[in-house]
Image (tube, rainbow, N blue to C red):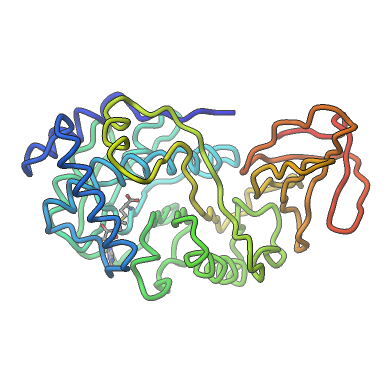
Length: 335
Ligand SMILES: C[S@@+](CC[C@H](N)C(=O)[O-])C[C@H]1O[C@@H](n2cnc3c(N)ncnc32)[C@H](O)[C@@H]1O
């Protein structure tokens, strides 16, 4: 299992921008207060992130930005698995905020994108977006998205759909889409709708979906598709988190990667649930087609394998019993 980490440049970068608005990583109490207020505002569904308020900005920089950055890292890893970033000439980071997705892409040595365009409705974000710690790429910030979409362009929209009334029609002008949303039951229908539209327009939904049939969780009252990552918390984050009621020891998120050119070729199943340890067996909700299915490993078979939400699997042989697929360890391969 991969444990994600924040890059070394991030703490000094955040601290520099916090100091410019009267905050700092050395004052965790002041930050925790701002984060608590911002979290309440989010729960009360303020329409957009209130960037003009220094307290909201401090909360975003010290808390939501690093957490979304980590989420982006896992989505990037999934994309790289399918060659998703190969040939991308430009990225439009829509609703870029401080440039979370762009910065994560720029920080990846295996990804080269010549041009980045950040778009947000707040001019205050221009300075944060353009201050990128590592870049050989051309970077621009726009208050209005550039109307023309170049060939080989990737649209990224991270935690933005939940601030919009619906998916803008121009999303589908891009070759590739990277969309990240909160892992909430409320956000999920928007992603399901976006997935259906993408499939109807001929896109390959590269991840997390291993197939293009109806999503087996689209009608579920209990489950919605989301991934999870484990991460190493730096000391400065631990100090802030110690003052908050919410603990982010693992991070969850929902996402979609889609490409106009098909990229997925091999059949596989994805683990879409945490391990359910029951009396005589362990079960994992998996996705490999339109049916809601569980992998099931009986206690008498020995120690259950360590399968995590988001893992990709291939099963060469299994026995289907209702919704359950029983399998032997020798027939299971992680890909
Ligand atoms: C929750 S923040 C996410 C920021 C960043 N993408 C991230 O993942 O950390 C949502 C951002 O979308 C921006 N936004 C909301 N509506 C927008 C619109 N119509 N056009 C451009 N940006 C918008 C907000 O100003 C805010 O910066």
